[in-house]
Image (cartoon, rainbow, N blue to C red; front, side, top):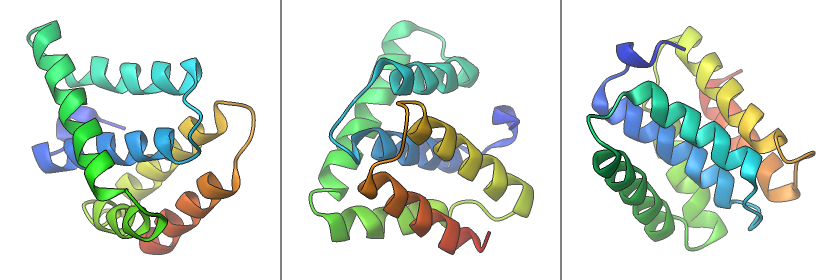
Length: 123
């Protein structure tokens, strides 16, 4: 995925979707964090402070929007709608799937999140 071609709202939506995935099973792993950090590397922030603020803002948005399973699902639907082209949808879905599978398997809630995104993307 060419990160530089994403608009700022798409960057935020991508990061929020991955953070939502990280928190979906209540089991944060180093592998998931490494994938999110890799994405942040691609965003090319001008300082570590900016990078940390960007991630912190994403975590705050996700926490607020995902307090219940229904609100998390609704937030995922809204985030997924940020991506229009079939190629971009596939790249975002693949990134989410890689993140969720990085901790050696998918939980029920992770599988449900993937299904929601897959449905919105019509994959």
